[in-house]
Amino acid sequence: MALYVVLVALQLGRRDLLNDELYSLAATHHLAETVRRTHGTMALYYVVLWPWARLSHHPVWLHLPSAVALAASIGVLARVVAAWFGQRTGRWAGMFAAASAALVRHGVEARSYALWALAVSLAWFHLHRCVASDDRRSRWWFAACVVAMPLLHGLSGVVLVGYLLTIAWCRLPRALAVRLSAPVLLALLLVATLWAAGGHEVGYFPPNDLDSARRFVRGLVFPGVRPAALLVAIAAAGAAAVVRLPTATAGDRLRQVGLLMWGPGCTFGLLLLSAVRPSMAFRYALPSALGFAGLLAVASTRSHRTVLTRLGPPLLAAGLLVGQGELRLPNHEWRSAAHHVSVRYRPGDGIAFVPADARLAYEAALAAGPAAHVPHLVGTGDPLGTFDRFGSVDDPAATGAAAARSARLWVVAIRAGIEPNRGMVQELLGHPTIRRRFRVGDRIEIGDVTIWRLDRISAEVD
Image 1 (cartoon, rainbow, N blue to C red):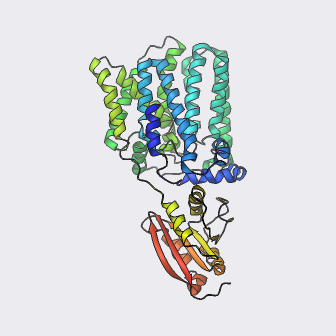
Image 2 (cartoon, helix red, strand yellow):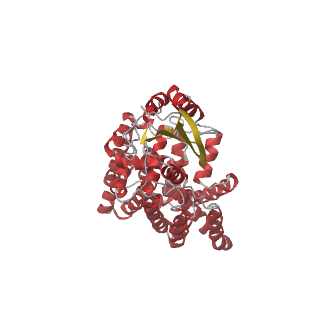
C-alpha cells in the first residue's frame, strides 16, 4: 500500500478532469436526472461522490476517493492471498498490484472503477471467511458487496458469475451454499433489470478488432505488448500452480479457483460479453488486475527453485515499475483556456462550445480555479456553472442564430482527429448570422483546445 500511495501521489494534480470524469462531476449537480438517464449505471458511485464534491471541485480532491478505495483494495488483496498462500506471497501480491500501471494510472480516475474493485476485493475476503468458518457477519458483508456491484458498474455480471462458479466448485454444505448464492443471484437479477431498462446503451463500445485487443492488453497488463505477453505467461504459470493444489476441503477448493476467477475469469467473461455487446475496454476489467497480481505472486514465490523465489519477485516488481514509464505530462489545458478567455473578457461576450458537452471541461476548470469572468452561454443548455450535461446538444444552427445578441463570440473546440471537430466548427462559423455580423479576431491553440475570438463587424448588438 505504501508503494501505491507514493506512486499515486506523484500522479495527483498533474491534469485537469477529462473525458468521463466530467460526467461524474456533472452527476453531482444533477444526481436524480443522471441516475434516471443512465439507468442506474454507476449510481452508487455518484451517491458517494455527491457530498464529497460539495466541498471542492478540484481534480485532486475528486480523485482522492478513488485513490483511497484502490489502496484499500490492494490491502485486502494482500490479506486474501496471504490467507491462501502465505504471508510472503501476500506481501508480493500487494507489491505487484501497487506497481501495476493500470491501477496507478487509471484506478484513481473520478469514476466508479476503484470503488467497484474495492467491492470485488471485499467480497472475496468475506467469501474466504465464510468458507473457513461460516462467519455470519461475513455473510452479510459478502451479500452487501455483491448487491452493490451492479450499482457501481453495469458490467458487474461477469464478476458475479465468477462468485457463483466458485461457490459451486467449493462444494459447501447446502445451507451455506444457498445463503451465499442467494445475494449473488439477486445481484444478477438487478444487473438484468438495469440492462433491460437501457443500461446496455450506456458506456463505451470499442470495436471487436485487433487494435482494441492490443489496447486492452496494454492497458490492463503492461504498456508494452511483448512485456505484457511475458507477464501473461508468468501469470499462466501461477494459474497452473494453483490448479494443481490439493482439493481435500472447501477451503482448498476456494484457494484453487479464487484467483483464477478474480483475474482471468473476469477478463474472459468480459471478452465473451463482447460478442454480444462490444466491451473490450480495459477499464471494464480493472478489478481483474488485482487477481492478475495475485497470480504473479504465486508464480514468483512458490517455485521449487530457490534462486527464482528469491530473485524473481524483486525483479518482477522492478519490471512492473518500468511500466509506469514517465509521469504523465502536466495537462492543464482547460484551466489555461478558461484563464485565456477570462482575462480578455468584456461585458456582453458570449461563448459556444464544439462539441456542446465540452462546456463541462470548461466549467470544471472554472470551478477548480479562482473566480473568473464568465461569458454567457450561446446555444443550448443551462448557463455555465450548472454542469448541464443533458441539456447541451450539438446544434450549430441554433447556436449561430443565438450569437446575434453577443458583443463578441468565443468559440471553444476540443480536437477530434486532425482538426478540432472540423465539420461542426465550419458549420458554426459559416452560419449566416455569424458570417454577416462577425469576423475572426484571434485564434489560439492550447494543447487539444482551440479558441476563436469573433469580433463584431459593427457595434450594433441585437
